[in-house]
Structures are given as structure tokens and as C-alpha cells.
Image 1 (cartoon, rainbow, N blue to C red):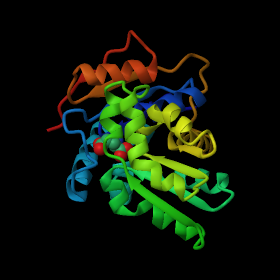
Image 2 (image 1 turned 180 degrees about the vertical axis):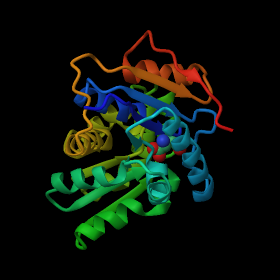
Image 3 (image 1 turned 135 degrees about the vertical axis):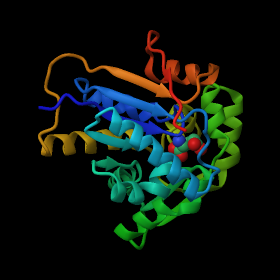
Length: 266
Ligand code: DGL
């Protein structure tokens, strides 16, 4: 048994969609979240900068004595995960592999769509991993940068969200994908309008759910689960606090009392 917390981080507060899934599956675990809200978005930055920022966050979480780290950010996972794994002496799980595995299980017609930030799509990480498992897969990718601010503004249920979805995804829909990887932390917040757009005929892969299963397996295999039957504590840290951040915290976690603490990494 190990009651040290699990560290979860993201470029902002979108990664709370991943924390939410971990909390659902592992309610006894203590969780520490860091969102780099002062420097978000990472999706438009270079690999070098993304990796430097992610390294600072891992060092912060190590000081908090975490037993495992989840890089909840797709942009970090696709650009910097191998660097982080090589440089830090702790298990670090990204969101790409779990999402890929789940998509491969779900697809029947072997045509998978991938959406994410520009940097995630440019990295081709999803495509490379998907094709490694099955060379004959058809893959259709699309960067959807406007989805992040739409989710952050709490506009998932608005006509703006519907228009952006139509604009980005009409071509992919016409290609008849049967599975769509939501390759960005914020996109699960748009799950409802996306389901509507695809008339519920396309599997939407929420990597957060897939990650929570891997986290549970890993902790259990290493004997690191916290088996106290007391609800785990959640501590939130951000590098800047503003209305948008509080909005997403409220929408995603449905916890009114929780207020993130501000810390600076540089
Ligand atoms: N967290 C990022 C991701 O999952 C989205 C926001 C950003 O661009 O930093 O790719």
C-alpha cells in the first residue's frame, strides 16, 4: 500500500478531464494536479520549449513526492514523453498510447480519425503508433485549434461549437471514419456536440478513460495502490489563476469548494 499522491499535469486545465477519469476509477488515490495556465497553449509552441516546460513541471511534482506521473497533455505526450521517461526516475504515463490502444479495439472498418492541436498533429505521433500496429489502417487527421478556447469559455453547448465542429470535421465525416481519437485534453468537454455531429455513429475515444485503466494496472502490478477506504484528496496547482481557469475547474470537476493554488515554476 502506498498513499503517496499521483501527479497529473497539463499545459492548462483541460487535463482535468484526465484527472476526472482517474478519480472515477481510483477514488481512494490522492491526486496532485498542475496546470501551466500562465504559459498555455503548448499546442502552438516548439518541441524544445514544450519539453523544457514539461521538465520543470515533472521536477515540481517530484518535490511533492508523487509515486507516478501522468502527462495528461497530448502535446507534451506526443513531443516530449521519451525525453521525460529517460531523464526522470519515476513511472511517467502519457495519453497517446492508451488512446491508440482503445481506438484499435473499437474500430471495425479500420478507418480512424485523429484530432488534436497543431503541434500534436504535426508530430505524427498518433499516426506512427497506429500504423505500427496495423499498416493497412486508414487514418484521417485534423488540427482543431479553436476547440480549446471554445471548451475553456464553457461554450460547448453553443452554436459556435457546432459551427467549429462542422467547419473542421465535415471532410473527415464524409470519409466515413468509424472511430475518432480526441487527441487533446479539452476535446472531451465537447463530447456532446461531437456525438450529435456524428449522429452517435462514430466511437469517440476519450484518452482520459484509457489512461485511468493503465494507471490502475501499473499501480496494482507494482503494489502501489492506496487501499485506505477514505476518499482521496485532490490538490490543484496552477501557474496563473483567472476566470477561465475557474470556469473549467467548475465544469470539469463539479467541485465548488476547490480553489487552485498559484505557484510559479521559473
Ligand atoms: N493540453 C493541450 C493538449 O492536450 C491543449 C492545450 C494547449 O495547446 O496547450 O494538447
